[in-house]
Image (cartoon, rainbow, N blue to C red; front, side, top):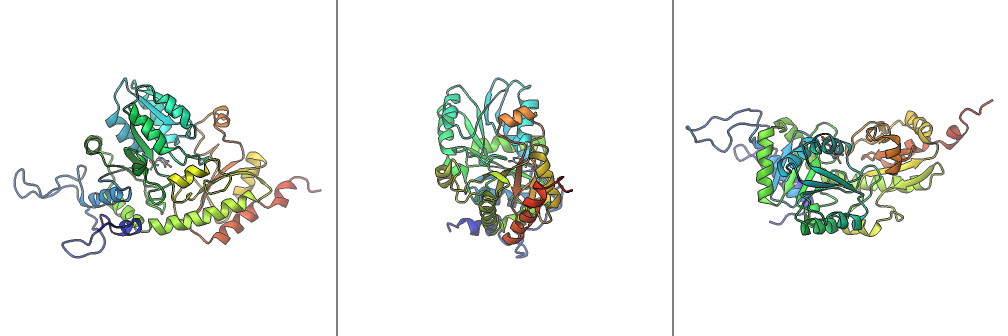
Length: 392
Ligand SMILES: *Cc1c(COP(=O)(O)O)cnc(C)c1O
């Protein structure tokens, strides 16, 4: 049966256990497997190579991206490493989106470039520059969309066709959107990478990563690396992730609804200079948002007037939003990218990338939206922030 996304999140890879009928996948907490005879295993030999709980997760992840093959990793960074190390070799060229996740940037600059691979960056939004850049021989294109923290989009279909014309593979880090909102393989990408730590897990209780593809050859190469390098998740984390996936559709709906209301509220607030949210009518890539995503997501960034001092004041007053890194959990988080997720960039480089001193990023959770707005309202309290220090 051709199941819809919501049905797949509940059932794909999670069929009742054939042995007992249990409706949840068992946690196979085992390192090894008894073999029926020498050279006669029953499908599993050793849990780095394969584990039934992980196999269920890999099947579920593939199904959600509309793919045949899924591979689970111990973290998002481990998934990225597996793609980069198994597909590149010295002398190759990779072109990555400029607003890159900091950990991917670090990997490319500290390990991939010194290994003899050319690394170039192109801004997500500048499709003409992507096309121009991909006239040179390239092995791999690395996209993120929407980007972090300014929530700009890359045109996945246009960049993929330019990449394929020069013989490059396209990997899309789909962590910010999740397959509930965007399916890059359907837009022409070859690989999807996830930090499953975020929306797919959804409860801020695990670290994990995934690679998904429809291409058997790419799958075989990355699977070989998964076993050779060994950064696999344990069965308990696979099980937690399977449980998280089952509510992905309803969680994403709540994240998007709350984020939209908060983005609209913020854009009317006098202390807020600018709001970055793909669902606002003034987002510069409105058409692309509608073409590429089914909903604009749960992340909202904004520029607060008054820079770091105003941000510190706001953060110290928040009661529901928790100050912390990461995103995609049921609880709302607030983060100050210049000193947290984007601290690796020098101040000048940060400003060149459009990250101002008052930039705040919200991962909007699934709490009641009125509570979230009330929390922001009292924290952004105009009076106390503008009269600060002027009391007699
Ligand atoms: C968190 C994140 C990663 C890295 O994932 P980990 O699970 O922390 O290793 C990669 N890409 C994006 C967009 C992320 O947000």
